[in-house]
Length: 172
Image (cartoon, rainbow, N blue to C red):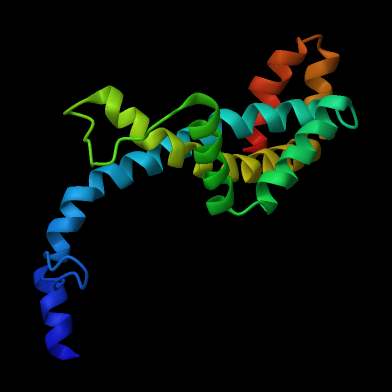
């Protein structure tokens, strides 16, 4: 165990059982792609989750709120691997899509890289976006009833300004 810990500290992670390559080289080769997928999915989750949560909180029990809550529960309940499989199958059967089979880094070919990372990023982003939408809705519903939000409305501020300047920063 001590020798293994010493190797880990030096950065020697051993060899892959399947390919025989050094694990550290595999991580260096594929790590940027994984980081790109992670960052893109976080960005997508915020782009999807925040507006859905805001609309859902400021129009409670409306059609938009009911649809947003239903979709949030659906994306929370559906496993990511199953959603990914559905996206791949739909892309293949309906659009004739064929994903690139190799690792293409962003600096080599941005378009091929986007085709490679967009599917996993969407799957991860929708799942996390559902969490963000639920949390945004819940926090905004708590904040909307506070005195400072009612005061901002009473001063005659537009609803958009009440949301952006008063409710949303405190809810976040």
